[in-house]
Image 1: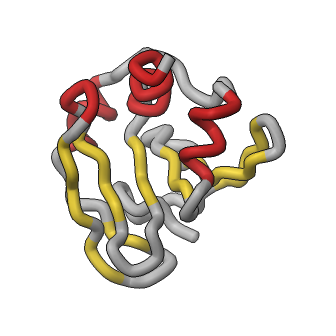
Image 2: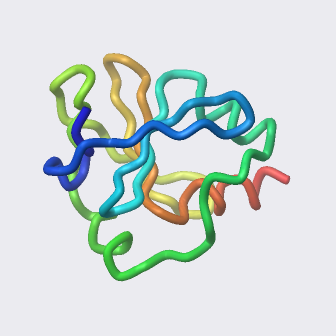
Image 3: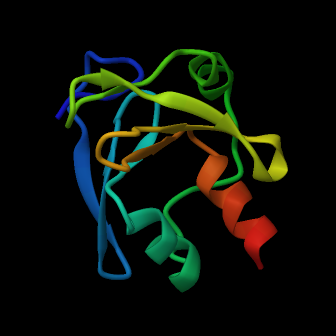
Length: 108
């Protein structure tokens, strides 16, 4: 699966507290299949840092494209004013670097 944002890099699987996610080795964004993000937040699995970067800021404005469904993902702004990309077809979620840590901080 290629990154939904930069679309040129193969996502790499990672396991955190028994939840497997996919991370882009370049932009550090993470793709969560339906239910995975909730498990990461509930278990407080540490898979992200608060370190937003120039790349993550730039990628935040890029429209994500769900590589599972081959459709554009919709951006939703919510908790902590984060712009979260969601696929209406499969329920997948893409978070840019730093967004998971921010969501976990606001959930605790």
